[in-house]
Image (cartoon, rainbow, N blue to C red; front, side, top):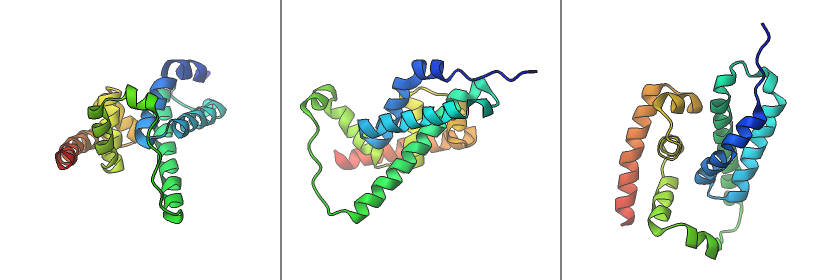
Amino acid sequence: MARERVDVAAIFAAHHVGLVRLALIMLGDQATAEDVVQETFARVHAGRSRIQDPDRALAYIRSGVLNGCRSALRRRALMLRRAVPYDPPAGSAESAALVSEDRRMVLAALRRLPRRQREALTLRYYFDLSDQEIAETMRISASTARSTIARGIKALGRVLEEDA
C-alpha cells in the first residue's frame, strides 16, 4: 500500500496566516514570526515523504512553529544578555491603531507567563483547539494540557491584577 503524500502547499494556503499569528503571539515580532513559519514549512516540505500520518500533518507543523519560536526566543535571550541595554522603539502608528489597549495588556501579560502556559493558552483561546489537539501539538498528554491551561488562566489573572 502506497503511503499518501502530504500536500504541504494546501496546508500552507489554509493555515499560513493562523500560524504566523501563533508565532507573532509567541515572539512579539512580525518579521521573525514570518521567518519561523516559512522555515517550518520549508523543512516540512523537504521531509514530507517521512510524515507517516497526513491527518496529523497540521499538528506536526504547529509543533514545528512552536519549536522554531522557542529557538528564536533562546537566540534573542542570548543576544540580550550580551547586548548593551536600550529602550526599544515605540510601536508604529499603524499597529497602535489596530490593537486596542485591552488587547495589548492581555498580550503583555501573556508574554510574562511561563512558555508552556503561554503556548497552551494561545492554542486554546486563539486557535480554539481541543485538549487533544493541544496535547498533540505540544507533545504532552490531554490531562497535562488541561491542567496547564487551568494554571495559565490563574497566572494570567494574577498578572493582569498586578498591572491594573
